[in-house]
Structures are given as structure tokens and as C-alpha cells.
Amino acid sequence: MTGNKFSDQLIETVRNKTDLVAVISDYLSLKKSGQNFTGLCPFHTEKTPSFSVNPAKQFFHCFGCSEGGDVFHFLSKIEQISFPEAFRRLAEKAGVTIPSVEALLAAPTEKDREIEAIYQLNDTAAFLFHQNLMEHKDAALARIYLKERGISAEMIKVFSIGFAMPKGGMIQRLKYSEATIEKACLMRKGETGPYDYFRNRIIFPIKTLSGKIAGFGGRALDESMPKYLNTSETPVFTKGKHLFGLNLARGKKSLIVVEGYFDAISLYQAGITNVVATLGTALTEDHLRLIRRFAEKVILLFDPDRAGIAAVLRAAPLFIENEVTVAVVSLPSGEDPDLFIRRQGKDLFLKKIEAPELILPFVIRQAALSSSGSIADKTKAILPLFALIRKVPSQTERGYYLKEIADAFGIEERNLRADFEKGKGILAGDGRLAGGVPTAGLVTPTVSQLPQVRLPEDEQTLLALLIQDQLDAALLSAILPDDFTTPQVKNIVHYFWDECMESWVNPGSLAIKVLDSDHALFSALAVLEISSENRGALLTDCIRSLRKKRLKREIIKTQTQLKSADKGGDHVRAESLQQTFFNFKKELSQMG
Image 1: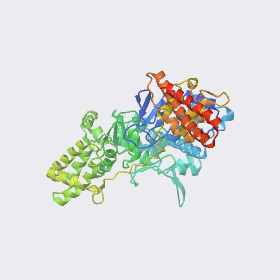
Image 2 (image 1 turned 135 degrees about the vertical axis):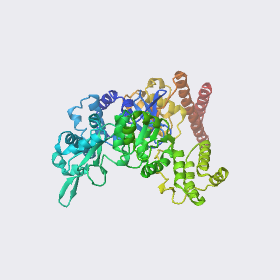
Image 3 (image 1 turned 180 degrees about the horizontal axis):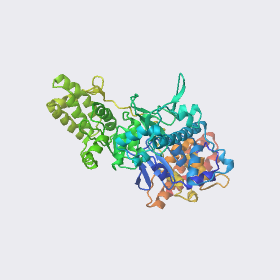
Image 4 (image 1 turned 30 degrees about the vertical axis):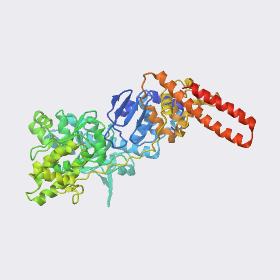
């Protein structure tokens, strides 16, 4: 890949000391599949895993969006940092010292410096907030409040909980420019000058998957509104893209999704560690993408009030469209997850979790409960449900849920099915469920894909074997680079050909040299699985196939030249071409 100025040897040293599977596993769940590992792509939304990692070649490729590359490309893309910054981080982690000359090349870009400065600033702020809570006399009420909420000293430490002083003062303690502090959303400017964004609030650091602090949530200790205040959007934080506690829940096969910080902390304290919180915002496509990287099952555990139920209803289309197994746990009226676990205990909570209700039956039940007995009102409540059921891929499941609707609303099933089959309810009024809750989830973004080129199987197989170092280039002596006719293949094949020696070679660190335009094909072939059975016969067949194609091209070319020579009366040349033609035909015939 182009775009870096480090020596090939240094890049290869860092690459060889870095485990791509381990790096990627920090961001998504991978499963062994043959010689590769597979998972859901973190770069686009998908239902079926198309993201593949080849541990031997240390390359990844997504067959859904065509994103692919090596460990440097993955880290650059997932963290949205430059190649030099990705290289620097991986070199540091691998214990590789960058020579002083090349260290200058690893200097971060302006964007990298800005992002790193905000992360460092957040880390410092979190330390100071935590110090306030643990040591300052003005934090006494905060400590009492946390104790009353049943939060232990251990949980305060695990979640790095802190306190923003009533009168502020954080700006003066942070040794950063006001511009950086403001950009990190720890400061605002008013008519009388700058002031702390968080004041008199219990602070919850919001961490990324890798444990970096991206932003903060603050719970007011007085009557200030809003009661919960989150960091506004910054270069490293967008509320709809983060889940509180995901760094601690990573790796769990199921996730419990709650609304609030205290809900997540109380469950974690009780030993239920597969829990995340939405920061008080609706579930988004980005949240779902984060969840699906790790979890196979999702349990929604929102407050049993109108707002909590509405949150579940809003999330329903998102989960159904993406075919995510999701269930809902309903708590008794007046009890949120935090209160329930503290009052009823872990055992009773686990019993609740063991018997959740699938999300569509929950939505149907809530729609029936919110409608009156009139036919007009029932119809108004049912039509949006049709839109949800149409998103269910299984016809059997659709039939089951239609029966559920008929039973819940007390309507004749055959009439309901007739309306459904006629297409009613695809767009129901303003597209809202009973109670004014929108049914439409966020639109799944269209995946930008590179033009799909069907490669000849022989060319694809030979190039894949070369890229994966499963073929000694010397074995290709019977063919030439021009025997590969597909332009994209030829662009990469020439790296394996020494023009001076006129022979095939194994070039070594090829990934460093391949042009960006050929990058997608290279990464796709780097993870392509090729059966190891009868490898010798496969190689022979591919080489024979290319040779036969070459001979056929030569025969057609010679025929054209022969006709031209006959037409021009050049009998000597025609005789020579005639012999060449027969030689090619004979060689082709002998190949079978």
C-alpha cells in the first residue's frame, strides 16, 4: 500500500510482531472458519458475516463492502487515524523502536494531534474528577448520594466515577489551552467569560472499546436541568455511537441493554457484567453495529414507564430489519433496573432475564393495550404493525405474528390476513405506532462497493496462491506475465516478475507496494480459501489452462496474419506463418 515513507523492513518488522487477529478481536468477535476467521464487518451494517481475516497472511477483507488490508489499514480505518499514527501505535505496542530518522515521519497529522490531545485531556479530567469525589470536602454530598444509591467504593473505582465541583474550577486545573478544553466540551464561554461545562454533577467517564475516555455523563446533585448531561459532540465523541460499559462487557455472547448509568453500574455490581447503557438516548444504527460485533443475543431492559416502553418500540424496526435476536424484559411498575436489583436481589433478577418476551410480541401487546375497543382505533393501531411484520424474512414467522395480532385485538384472523395480503399498512398514516411512537428506524446506509469483476478461475487461483505465499514462484516457469489477461490481475502479477532476470520471484513484503487501486483485489485474494487437497494437480491444471488460452490466442492471431499475407501476395511469409499455425495447433492438441 502506498502513502507511507517508512522503510519496508521497519514496516515488516512491526507487522511480524503484531497479531492481526488479536488486534481486530479488540473491536469485534471473530470465529474460526477453515483457515480464516470471520465476523460481522465493523465498517458497514450487515446481517451475515462477510468479514474475513487470514492469520497466516495477516490480511483482512470484507466481501460485503470491499474494505480490506493489513493491520495498519485496519487500525487507521477503525480509529480514523492516519497511517503514521497507526504505525506509531502498533510499533509502540510491539516494542519496536522507530529509528530517529524515521521517527520524524511518524509525526502525527494535525487531526491525529487534535484527537490525541482530547483523549489525553479527558484522561486528565477524569483523574481530577475522581480525585474530587474521593478527597474534596465539597464532594461530601456526592459521596453520601452514591452511598445511598448503593454504589460501593469498588464500583466507584471500576467505573472511574468522579465529581464536578459546584463552583467549577476544572478549567484552571487542566494544563491545556482554552481552545482544546472547549473542543473537548469541558468548557463553555458565556457573557462573563469561560465556565466549566460540568458543575455540581456526579461524573461518569464514557470509554471506547479500547478503554480510552471519549466523553462524560453528569448527574446533577441539585435541581439543575437537564438531570443528566452528556458531553456534546466532539472530534472523539458522538452520543449515538457510544455505549456506557461496553469496554467491560466486550466479549460476552449476550448483552443486556439498559438506559441509565446507575442501571448499568448496579447490575455490574451484582455480578451481571454483560450490561451496557445507551446514555439516555434512543438506540441507533451505530449502537446496533457496536452490539452485533460481539453479542449474538440482546435483551432490552428499559424502565417500565411510558418513555421506557416508547424506547423499546422505537428500537423494534432497527432490530427486526437487521435480523438481530432481541427480547424485552418487563419490570414491575415503578421499578427501574437499578431499583429492582437492589430491592429484589440478583436471583430474582436472573429469573426475570431467563424468561424475556421477544420484541415483536411485546410491540403487539403494547399496541393492543394502548388502543381502545373501537374498530377505527384498532385499525389505526394495527396498520403500523403490518409494516414491522413485513420486515420479518420468514413467511412462517410472519404468519405466526399475524395470528398474535388477531388474538391480541380480538379480530377475525382471516380478515386480518386479507388486509395484510392486500398490502394495507405498508405506509400507515404518519408511520407511527399507537401512542405516537415512530415505527421507522434509521435507514441502513447503502454500501459503496467497488465494481465486481469476475476473474478467470485459473488466474484467480494462481494469484491467490502467490499472494498467500503458498506457491513457489519458480514453479510458474511454463507461463509468462502476459498469460494473465485480466487488467486487475496483471497489475499485481507484475510484482512477482523480475524483468532483468526474466523469471518469476517471491517479492516478500508485497502488501507495502501494491497500489491503492489494486488494494481491494489484493486483500480479497489474501483471505480467499483454497483447498489444500491435490494442490499439485490444481497448480498443474491452472498453468495448463493459461497455456491453452495463450495458444488459442496465438492461433487466432496467426490466422489473421496468414490471411493478410495471402491477400498481399507475400508467399514466403505466408508459408512461415502456415508452419507456425500448425505448430501451435499441434501443441494445443497434445495438451488435451
